[in-house]
Image (spheres, rainbow, N blue to C red):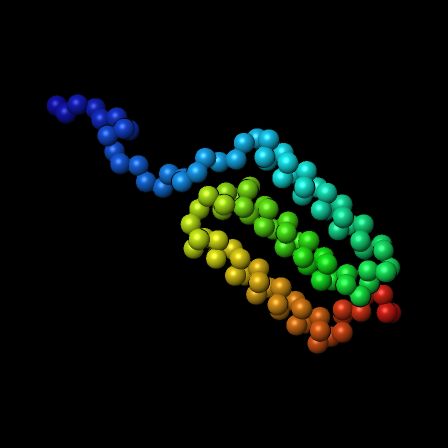
Length: 112
């Protein structure tokens, strides 16, 4: 009969290059996400920001997307290929949204 093997005898693959973030970091990121969400709700009611409202909301949303993907989906610790697979559709969707809003005149939020 053969002897039972242990997990240490097998080569390990796919181990992260860095240790994952601590609980403290996750709580800080969650606080930042909450603050940015509150800011997004707040800027909607400031009429002086009307000319830059849509680009401002897009930038804030992209920042939130980056934080969620980097920390909560652990993309910060994965390869650059996976980063590209998440960032490329975001850039494409943003450019498409800007193009559609430009063509339809929807950048003028409070002009109605």
